[in-house]
Image 1 (cartoon, helix red, strand yellow):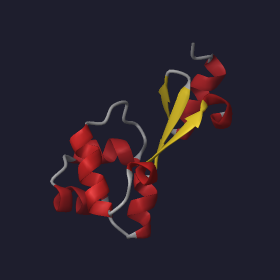
Image 2 (cartoon, one colour; image 1 turned 90 degrees about the vertical axis):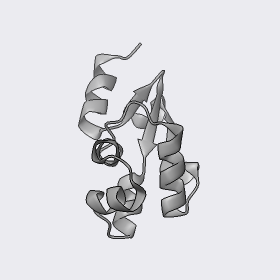
Image 3 (tube, helix red, strand yellow; image 1 turned 90 degrees about the horizontal axis):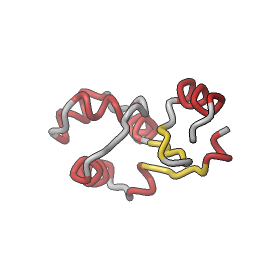
Image 4 (tube, one colour; image 1 turned 120 degrees about the vertical axis):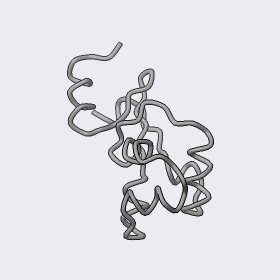
Length: 92
């Protein structure tokens, strides 16, 4: 059950809620390290702008496996570099 305090934390921070856990997406950090814009990633990967934007701002509630694979190949990183699982207690 998502408590109102947790809900407002999620709304303020942009974390995604998933069955008592928080999933943090590090796409914005990876892009920042390489000084890439959302348009650059879309052009270079062929991913739709809405998909990249949702991940960049951590608003995505689902991600297709091909999107994860494409981003990992593009940034030469692992899934763990792209996403981080945080138990609910760490997020509050």
